[in-house]
Length: 68
Ligand SMILES: [Zn+2]
Image 1 (cartoon, rainbow, N blue to C red):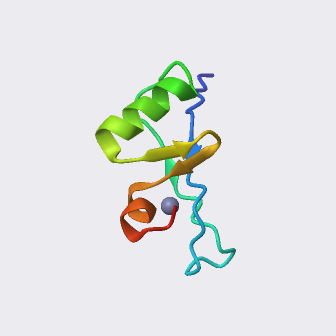
Image 2: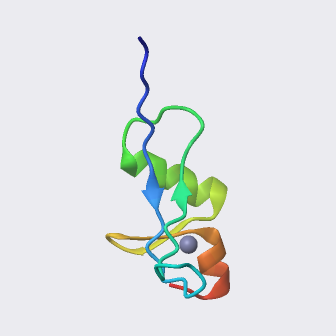
């Protein structure tokens, strides 16, 4: 059996259009990365994710919409 664990970064922005009021969009990378630090760097440079402060990840849609 082969199992791969993919790291995920989840958007922390509030989104009033979502049922629970949270965006919760997930950021992945298609190949395995070593850790969340590396994943965040890839998402930031290649996918437009932001991290305005520690413990707060914002997806590109929320960032563009001003949900920070
Ligand atoms: Zn979001």
